[in-house]
Image 1 (cartoon, helix red, strand yellow):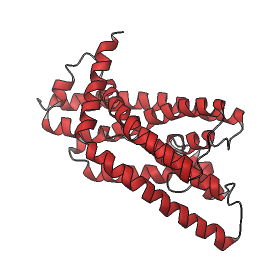
Image 2 (spheres, helix red, strand yellow):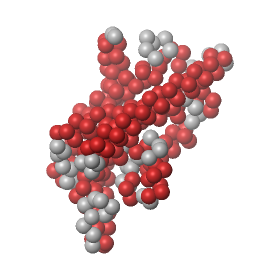
Image 3 (cartoon, helix red, strand yellow):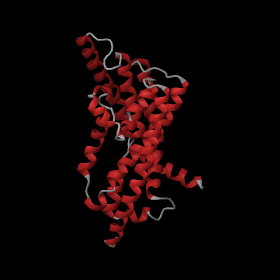
Image 4 (cartoon, one colour):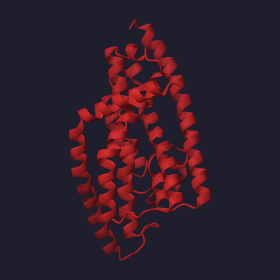
Length: 266
């Protein structure tokens, strides 16, 4: 395996992220503001109800949950659907296919380079803000290790889902509406807006059959040690299974879409 080609693609992704560095500045400003909103919202809810624990969360744990949710969002952010739509519509895909790696791998490695920029300029400040001002605990070492592994798989799953939606551009050409729905929908279904334990039992049972909990909720609960160790490994295995399933689904849809793309003479 030639690692130089992958390092080169990561450098490309890093440079792309540099071109959008104003986004990082806005994120660093908006993240503490969002956390302040969550802080006072839940502080009011806990004060009004008089409860010290709501659905298994203390106030401090719930605030820490939202800090972790935003940190995970940095890692799992993906615009694979946007770039894929652009390449298909403008015919640039043909040049991407000349690369010595599969297209899906090419796009993933570039986004990996973009995420490396995010880690340097966004993750560390947000983690520090969460730790000093918003009750984010330092987890035990085993939880940190499992969290990092689960987070890596969550990032792959999010990318795969974004790429899968992008494949619809082979038939629809413009998928702006789908792309706009993707982020808020995943945020809701993955526990980014409310922890999944707040939903009715029938919904959580149904939700276990979907991949979205593995994109945010599961890594958070692993870090917070809210899941027994045996269940952690089972859930991480579930993440791995969904990565395989989505990978196979992407391959099938890609083959069908590529035949259509080639058939129109592009």
